[in-house]
View 1 (cartoon, rainbow, N blue to C red):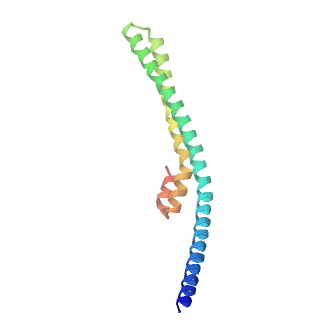
View 2 (cartoon, one colour; view 1 turned 135 degrees about the vertical axis):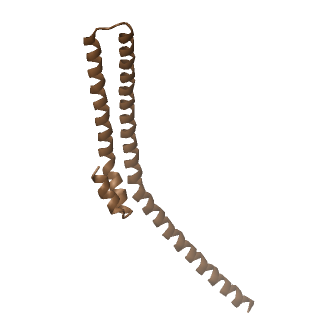
View 3 (spheres, rainbow, N blue to C red; view 1 turned 180 degrees about the vertical axis):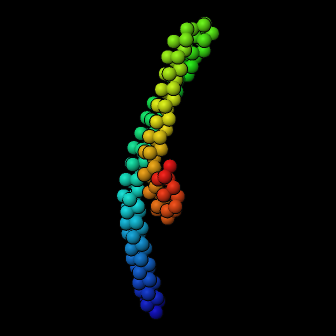
Length: 134
């Protein structure tokens, strides 16, 4: 009976071992699938983040140029510049203001598809439609 008990224990241990091995295999498959599924998303996010960073740096550079031009305007106004110089600087200021506004609109347009998809996945259809109406 001690022998029977030892054999039963070995069978139980083997069954537990096989169950554990099967569970490990299942978990490995799930982790592999999740990794493959989210790998693409992560890569796309990194690419998008790079594009956003590039856009931010360009916009920041444009803002720096605008600040320089405002400083030039102030100096010219203090030094009594003629009306034509002030008008030219004012027109450039307007032009750059429009460029900044267009850049903001482009950024919003670029971000809209991903925001739209996210809202649709969340089943927030009214918000998704409102996003398209902006």
